[in-house]
Length: 149
Image (cartoon, rainbow, N blue to C red; front, side):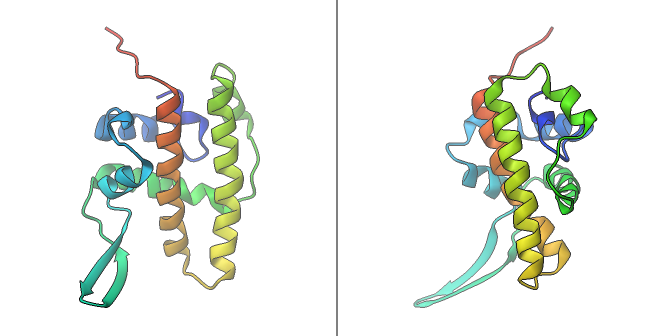
């Protein structure tokens, strides 16, 4: 939970909800499996040679998807480390801090790029939530869960 809070848009309740709903992210071989579990992958209608992609499937875990989308709205603003996030980063390993900063820079830029391409805000935020899941997966690969009694 503490490691996930290194990400912008992931405070205590979001991190706890993510952990409770997903469990150990290491059970997913790659981030795309996690995205599919969350229902953050495009739907597809294919027949023969014709392939038509639609909106996200929404077939996955509703609660986890909702908290990710709520957290993704924070990437509308430029990348920076606020005092709150800095306090959460202090006791974390360097690799987790690097992943969180890389995520922030990438996702803030991606949001601006999607809006510049003419995408609606909700579509851009959903795309950010999808990538946010991949960065959370990467953090989960770095930190093994601990059981506290």
